[in-house]
Image (cartoon, rainbow, N blue to C red; front, side):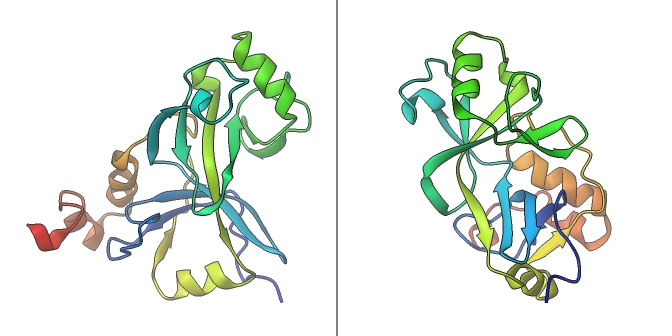
Length: 184
């Protein structure tokens, strides 16, 4: 049985009470949701390290973001240049993910793709079949109806706060609280 709701292309906003090392105050974009499970990337947690620290054949300082706790030995990427990156997978609008790595490496090194056209992630976020649906039902995540954000922008926790502002209501009380309210 597949998920009641297909999460592909949706933004997930962690509930303020989700105190998980990876997902606390996270906004995750889901890129795959099928019978095998769900895959996504955290958009708003920079590692503050250049991609060249992880891939020696890329000689630029494009920043790398925390994609999630799974497979942290691999770098993944979103981009807006399917014209120069073969086998890109369309997400929505002019956003793509994956593609032939050699195309990415060559385009970045030759400056054919700019920093605002690509975003790198270390690892990814993954859920087994139905696991994410259960977490949404348990109110660990809020599924946003609107995914109209710039995926390639350098977001920090202000993305999490902006999504809570869009939701309004009781979510507004969390916007200015410290990461750990117990320290307040």
